[in-house]
Image (cartoon, rainbow, N blue to C red; front, side):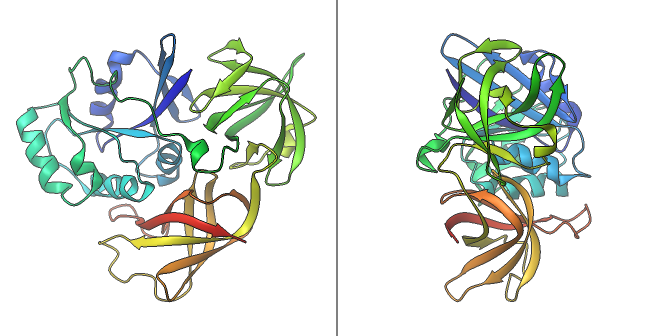
Length: 325
């Protein structure tokens, strides 16, 4: 079954939750709000979070694994710096499909969206009412992440715990290709092998899970201690590296640019990691991480400066990984 992952974004949490209410009540997992629906051949996962704008890390994580975005405008139409930061995040994460949702007057919403998001990808999203019956149903299938990394399987893991009588369970999203029972996977970045004993989606046992699925994997040959925040599980061909080259575009609001080496945090599908960023004569940047991270050509990367306090955009640019050491 094809599963589309979409981010639920916007500066007003009340408006966001109201727009998503047609999907039912979300399940909550450590600050992540998850709305899930499915029919016989297609699933849809809508992700929201509860800690932004204080913690941009959480919303970056959601965007990095999303195929689309649902951007909800506040009912009063008053946008803030938060909306600007979120729009820039989508721009540099290259989330190119989605909708802008009006919780107030739709004509006013169109005017606001065209004016505020002019020049950004978000300005091309259709504007619709929160009461539109097709709001979520026609977002369509997501682009295949497996095409971005040569068909390799990668599961982004966010929780690991033991269940008595069952063993180690890890929770996460299949963000590239698919995973099946009895697959032998690598715990990344360390490379330790583990076998997939069983798979659950929404507490239902399945034999395999496709790209986009929220899964619980029971792993044989691994322990909770093997998992730290930001690690993943990948097939044999997924590589790890301390260095990557990125075709970098600076935010139009980050006027100073990157003209000398600087330490920044970089969000990719593999997680948020601190890197030493060195500009190159051809406009690319070389990122040297403090530790090995799962990486492949075509990964989308957003650069953030966490030293910038909330109130101004912490998103300073982004690009595509073109090579790694």
